[in-house]
Amino acid sequence: MLLWRDRLGQISLATTTLFWGAGATLQFIVIDWASRALGLSLSQASMLQGVVAVGITIGVVLAARLVSLRGAVKVLPIGATMGVVVMVMIFVHNLWLAIFLMTAIGVCAGFFVVPMNALLQHRGHVLMGAGHSIAVQNFNENVGILVMVGLYALMVRSGLSVSMAIVLFGVCVTGVMVFIIMRHRVNQSQGDLMHLIGVEKH
Image (cartoon, rainbow, N blue to C red; front, side, top):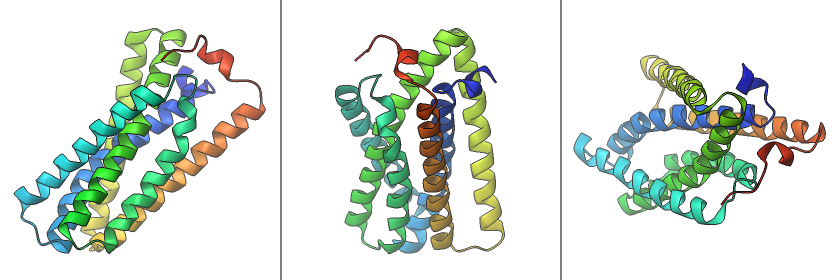
């Protein structure tokens, strides 16, 4: 509750929880989508997950070089964009386009999560110490994974098509991110948040 009440902690905790939940769900979505839209086997579809990982690595490197701790909240729109990019999957039926799209999704994810994770670790360290904040983060992220994967399992069980599941997933990610952005703006209107971050770190 200490982190959820903090004006910067709640933003970073919400975004990282969403990221890990969405990331775990996306792994299942990619396998189902690659099988139906691209005609790939399970092992071939798994390679697309590796492509996403490559994109994440690129995004992580870019974030480390381009985004400071003070500028962490500026990447929030990237999270909303990621949901839109995921929805483009329903229009892709070519392997090379799929590889490009998976890379783009990974880059967005890596560029988005590193600053948010850094901000969360910083606020957690200030508020409760590193060990406790990591425990809180892991708890929330695993709850996020359980909820989002569970919802996807319910959609599959109900007979929903992969394309519709992808659209609902993308809308959910984008919608939650828009809500988080709006919440952050409300927090900003209540006072300057930069003093909460402290000395700028690179």
